[in-house]
View 1 (cartoon, helix red, strand yellow):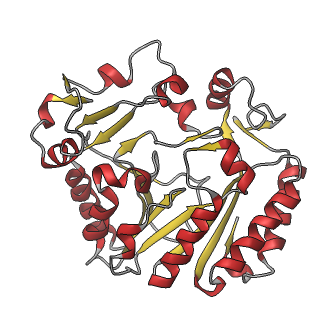
View 2 (cartoon, one colour; view 1 turned 45 degrees about the vertical axis):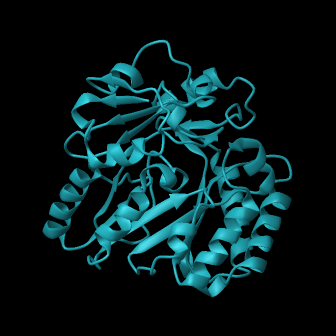
Length: 322
């Protein structure tokens, strides 16, 4: 485990270290000495990820990208206190962004809270995605950041956060009182894609089970089918997924549904293809539009309309965002 010297005695550092009593500690001046060094292999490092504990840099709150769905919320922002993910999804953009597969935790999350509070006080309403460069629930047992966000927004009714996940690690939330301004969003893929292309994530059925349990406790749950992946038996795989989903969960308690196709910047895809030369997903003959690779307009329209029609069997159209 690599730790920046200046945060060795940070309370969150000590909390994390208490869970790794036998870890070898290497002190560093700056996390980039390790994380941004040359000649790294993202996928090789995924097989034995190292943990890097670091301090936040200022200005950790960013305006949401136009290509991301804001769900009609004003003042859409995102933040990330962790870089990289314990999961290893074949199509994940992180492998195009970073050369390292190791995980960086910026332990002084309270500094982020201060920035968010300042922005919230200025804007009066705020919609914030907090699980942007990682899956916070997947790493909750290490740093408890999801719970820290819960208590931070508990008395701020116009500060709404989204926690997006492919994890089934929800036990902590089953024992917390649901908040109207805390949305747990599950990304779902058909079982065959989850098993083959989303390494280490919860299975499709385990994610559905988690959704059902959270709904029963009163939590606001969002369903995200993003990215849609085109493959053989596309129609069969996705229609069966949606049918199973609504046989298990309460459709009336789904707050909304987000649908989006695979899309990635030209630079990221080039790097990802070099690292995944046997990937059917990444080597699909995408079209490049304004520097972004995605499916052709015809294919994209067909995919989205097909999925939308499946959802309309269960959900009102005003709950579907594309």
